[in-house]
Image 1 (cartoon, rainbow, N blue to C red):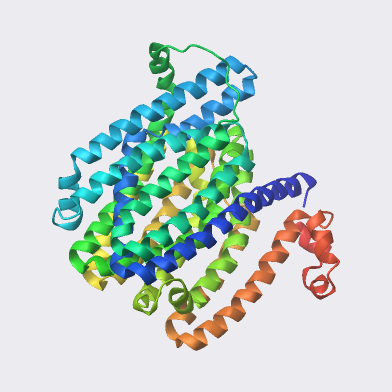
Image 2 (cartoon, rainbow, N blue to C red; image 1 turned 120 degrees about the horizontal axis):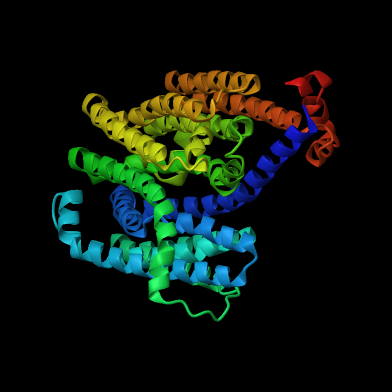
Length: 510
C-alpha cells in the first residue's frame, strides 16, 4: 500500500476518532436520558417526545432555509481569505438571518398549533404544548448559527465542547423534570435543553473577534442570497427527511397508537446510536475533503472508496454486536415493556449497514455542486420510504416499518451508485468490493442467527462472532494504515495482540 494511501486512511481514521469520541460521550448521556425517560414516563412519554421532536425539527428545517449548513461554508471561505472585515460581514449576516428565520418559524408554528395537533394526534389536546414548543425553533436556529461560526472557523475543540456540555446538561435537566413532573415535564425539558444549548454556543462563539463594521440591512439581504442559495438544497433534503419521519410517526400513531410509536422510536434510536460516530465524521471531515477534489473525478473515486472501507471496518463490529445483544440492549436501555422493539431493531441494523455503504457515494452530488441531483434523489428516496412503510404496515404490522427501512436502503445503495457512476464514473475498487462482500456475508449470518436462535443462544454466538469480526476489522484497519504508523507500532508492543495483528507483506498489497 502506498504512503499516500496510508496517509489518507490515517486522516480518515483520525477525524473519525475525534468526532466519534464526542459522539460516544453524547451517546452515553443520550442512553441515560432514554433509560430514565422509559422508567419515568413509559412508552407513551417516549412516543410523545418523538412526535414533538419531529414537529419542531420540521419547523426548524422549513424556516431555517439551510443557512446553518451553508453558513459553515461561507464562514470558512471568509476565514481562508484572511480578510477580517469579510469575516465580520459574513458572521454578522449569518447571525441576523438566523434571528429572522427563527422568529418566522416560531410564529408560524404557534399559529398552526391546533391543525398540527389534529394532524399528528387526531385531536387538539396537544395544541398548547405545540405552541409552547414553537420557541424551540427560534432558540435552536440561533444556536445553530453560533455553532456554524465555530465550525466554519475550524474550532473543532470548541464545537465538541458545545455538543458535550449541551448533551450532559440536557440529560440532567430531562431526568429531573421527568422524575418530578412525569409526562407534564416533557415540554419544559425540551425548552430548557434548547436554552442551555444556546447559552453554551454563545459562550464559545463570543471568543470570535469581529471588527466594528457597520452593516446595513440592505447589505444583509444582499449577502443572504449566497446563504439561501446554497442552503436551499440542504433545506429541501432536511425537510424531506424530517417530513418523512413525521409522516411515518403519524401513520404508526393513527393505526397502532402512541404506545407502539414508542416501541418504534426506541428501536430506531438505538440503531442510530450505533452509526452516529461514523456518519458524523463523514459530515465533519469527509465532505470538505471531497469538495476540495471536485475537479478530479479519479481522486474523488479514490476517497469515496477509502471512506467506505474505513466506515465499514469501524461500524460492522458494533452492528453485529447490536444484532446479537438486541434483547439485552432493549431491556437495559428501556424496560421490559419495550421488548417488541427487538425485532424492529434487527431490521433497522441491516438498513444501517447499507447506509454506511451508500453515504460516501451520496456526498458526491453536493461536493460537485450538483444541487438538483441532490434534491431529486433525496425527495425520491424519502417518498419511496413512505410508500414502503405504508406497504409494510399493511402486511406485517409495526415490524413492517422496520422492514421498509431496510428495503429503502437496498434501493438507495443501487440508486446512489448509479448517480455517482454518472457524475464521476465512480466504481468500487477491488479492495472495497471484497470488503463489502465479506462484511455483507458476516452481517447476514449474524442477522439470520438472531432470528432463528433463542435469545440466550443468539446473544452468546453473536457476541463471539462480534469479537472475531472486531479482530478482523482491527487487522484490516492496521493494514491500511501501514506497519510504520504509530498505532500499528503501539499494538505490536502488546504480546497478546502481536501475533493476531502482525501485518505480513502480502497484506500490504490489498
